[in-house]
Length: 334
Image (cartoon, rainbow, N blue to C red; front, side, top):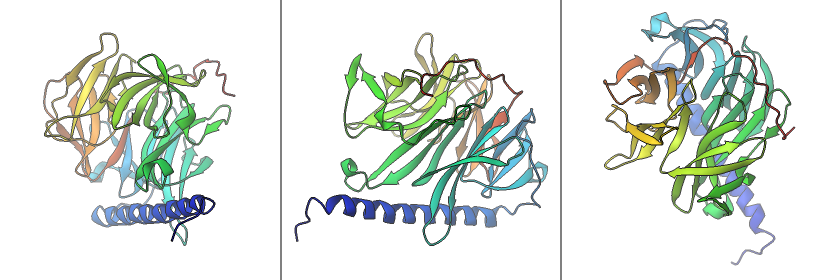
């Protein structure tokens, strides 16, 4: 039976809803399994602005440990449930899938005491979360299904929130994109892994289109982005803003962590020999950390040394430093 044009959008919506329910159920089940594998102590309050600590997700809940990592016995575990988490300058971002007849996905903004101050409903499975160094700009990525251009496959939605103005972009796919210096338009663009610089205006991320991925540099105020190079995904900016660490497709791979010097655009492969499918974070100015096989590992950012285990049964790590002053940047998107 041929489906009429008026019924096709309804069918796509139904496909999307069904796929999101399945993906959300899987995410909730994974959280429950993780909690059983890594039993947690009694929940305690956390201060997201306490410097010199690691924050991460353990057993589906936000937890804290010394910067050096350590055993589960050294951890403080909160009662806040998240699938993905990040924090900076006393602002937290929690991506969570709620259970029920119709599961829902939310990006929740938390204050330093982990009280929810804003929530934005999205769709799909939590994938990436970031907060700018000042705590002003937050960004998140979710996997979704059912976009018409993807013919039932998976795609991504990336949202951005300016916590000072309250202005939110639920999906940044309409940003002006330039590849090889020319305005680029295509219905299949997908963005993920947005990471803001210290000025709360410039950002880095990934775009995929027509089978290729690109590292992008964006200007939030102008609402435009340009491709810097191919085959670079999930960038993470160093504390001093001079380097990016990202994952790159290699053979036999599929992923390898690299560092990029933004002044020279020179790449350096890191000493992690295994495939890493994560958005790395910076432990300090010389070391990056990342999720691998259900734990968090660390490796020098200059290509030397060897990986070391930092935290077992953990994901979404972030090192909390001293609070930064909010950047005095004039955003035109207010």
